[in-house]
Length: 111
Image (cartoon, rainbow, N blue to C red):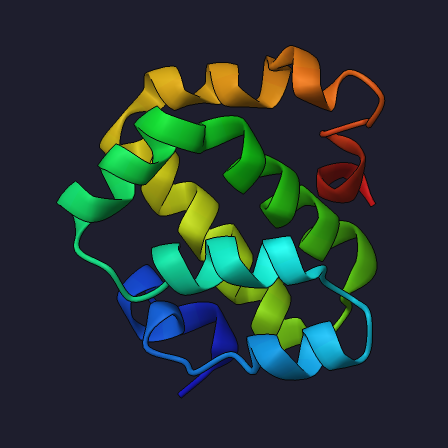
């Protein structure tokens, strides 16, 4: 199958080695904990996590996009963000949270 034909569901079926990324210091221990709580969960669980701690999840997603260049992982995180915003477009406000003020949350999307 051509990569251009992959659906969000197909991309999200991938098993991403988050622990390996933590071991190699590409994600933090806190980032790993957040990803373990969020990854492969039902939409209702993810929605509650985003309601409770959305800026932290956005920060982890953006840092992964900034620091990890493996195509499968980048596609996976973009699919998570797409799913998050498709389920509730108002979550775009999470990218404007003051906790992200010291970061350019959009830079990884532009490069």
